[in-house]
Structure formats: structure tokens, C-alpha cells
Image (tube, rainbow, N blue to C red):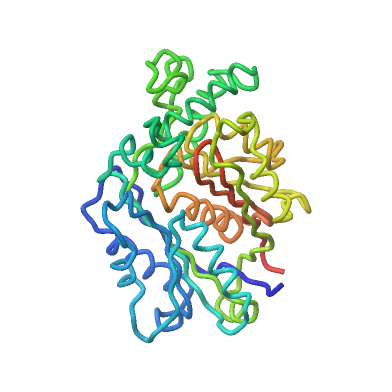
Length: 350
């Protein structure tokens, strides 16, 4: 397979609410990512964006976001109704064809303008799940209850995850929520959706991210420190949570194996864990024993829906390029109760 590397990236500060449009958010990160890669928009051969019409509140909302990349010179463009991590996967596949050298992937979301409890049930299976009116938080609470009742986690362990990740986020200038939290105090708070408390749930966040990737020789030309994508895969299981074992994530395990995550030690893992109980499930499925997870703070510190997974890739790449790690892992997920999972393995210069 053609070696492909991340050569530049950018993301916006993550905030509770912004007055910028998605197109403007993307303009900022596309500019930042191309500058980080030492190129201009004209050097980009292919672009792929991840966004959600439901969150944006209009059909074909991604069309206006193309302005962020520019229409001249003419270039190939695509869109996925998924997190930007899946846009990166499509861009990675596109570069494998060998006829172009540089691509950019983007993810953007302004969740502050939406009502998650109304929107997310509309995206579910129209016959069996949508009529229930259950949103992402309801499904997450269901999975957390299964884990607690099975004795696989405790409420204290979940509170410790919340406190650790948000403490780590103090060093992340892009984080939305950070600080010191007392576990005993957290456990006295009321439930938001039993058994989940406020600290178990990621914040509503507006933000965007972009990543530039390039084929082997071009990547080496652009930077002395390319971050190589040495494994990339995603896998899905049934959309209906009732036919799955919610104590594990078979699709995450399959994606990790296909990406070759087990072919060497992982030094840092950035996981798209929008809820505290998802961390132990994914850690077990991905084989991340004694591996630092979400030192950036992760989604519990900032959760720009449709860009959260791409931010995980950026943070994993940052650990390699800027902090001297050799091999890291980034993860993204979509669907109820960790239904679909993506794994990206990154390595330093070789």
C-alpha cells in the first residue's frame, strides 16, 4: 500500500457557542492546516468534509462549506455524513489510487444551534428505534446501566475517569471544560439520565478541524516530521442495540485488528469517548492495557460533533510530531452504543 502521512493540521478553539458559520469555522482550519503543511489551497488535489445536515438544520448544508476550500483551481471534492475521521479515511483511500499527491479532510459542527433530544432520534431506524424517541444520551445510559449491573464498572470508576480527563485538559488550550474535580463531590450530584450524571456526559461544543495528508515522496518533501498512517480501518455492527452485547465492542476490536494496532506497542490513545463508561469498553476492545488514554482531555473536555473523531487523530498526531511519541492510536465512533468504530494507527518518521 502507498505510504501516506499527515503533514499538517488545525482546529478551532472549542467553545459552548460561536457566532461563526460552519463555512467560516472551516475557512479558519483549512487555512491553518494548509499553512501548517507549508502549502496553499491550490496544492490540494482532493478534499472531503464530514458534517451533519441534522445538526446544521438544513439539507445539503455541506455545499456552502466548500467555500472554505475554494473552487479554483478545480479539484475533486467529496462529503460524508459522518465525523471528519471518516472523511480522512476517504481521503486516505483516494490517495491510494496514486494519481494525486495531497488531500485535505475536514469536520465541523455547531451543536449549540440544535436540540440533541429532538434531532438524534430522527436519525435512528425509522421503524423500531425512532418511535421510541430515545436520543444518544438515553442509549448511553442504557449501556452504562448494563455495564454497572454486570459489575464491569462502578460509579466511582466513572467519576474518576471524568476527573482525570478534565484535569489533563488543563494543559490543552483548545479544551472547553477543564479543571480539578473531586470524585466524592461528583458522586453526590443528581443524575442527568440515570445512571449518568453531568460529569459522565460530554459538553455541547461548537468547533471544526482539518488535516492535510500526502503520499510518501510528497510528504517527505513537505516536512521533516511526517506522521505516517500505518493502519486505518473501520467496522460496524447492527444498528439495533437490542441484538448486541453492550458490555463489549466487537466492531472496535475488528477495526483495531484490521488496522494492525496489535503489531506493536501503543504509547498514547485518543478515543472518542463522549461518555465516561465508553472508555473501559473501548480500552478492553482495543487492547489498551496500561496505555495513557485521552491525555488531551478527550471528548469529555470538548465534543464538537462531526469533528470530535478528527480531533482525536490530530491529538494522536500531535503526540508523535510534537511530543516525541513513536506509535499512537486514534479512534472515532458513530451510531448508538458504539455501533460503528474507526481506528487509525500513527507512527513517527521512518
